[in-house]
Image 1 (cartoon, rainbow, N blue to C red):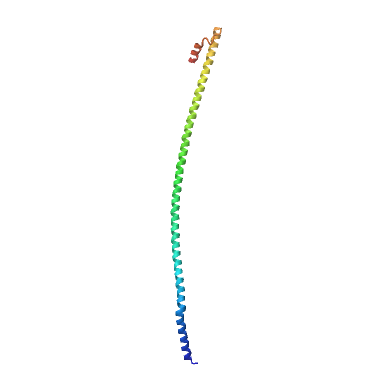
Image 2: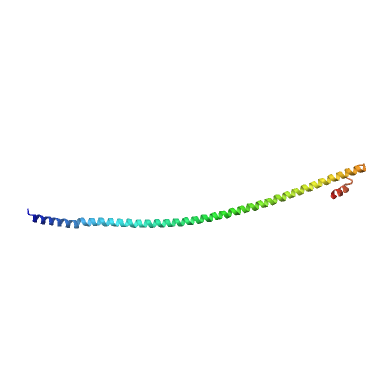
Length: 156
């Protein structure tokens, strides 16, 4: 065979191969590459949407955290005020109870003083009658002279 005929035949075969490849294989490869390109673009868009959603969620959680901290501070402040009010009320109740106990104690002291004075008056009256009886060498009737004994006890 002739080398020129072989080269022509090989060139024709290569041209047919290129034509068949461009007609049947190349469109399939282009379609596969376009599909892959579309999937990659969709994946990148989804990743961007996910990143934006993550950023939005982080921002929202930060805002909610700030709101929760502010609410916690309000609750702590209210609790402090309520605690000081409770302490003040307890202090006032203790002061009122102290005043009541002091008044009751003073009333009891005054009652005991009055009882002691009355007992002392009776004893002084009895001693005066006994002393007068000894002086007069006769017995004085305490019931008969109750007015005099009462006057004497009142003077003491």
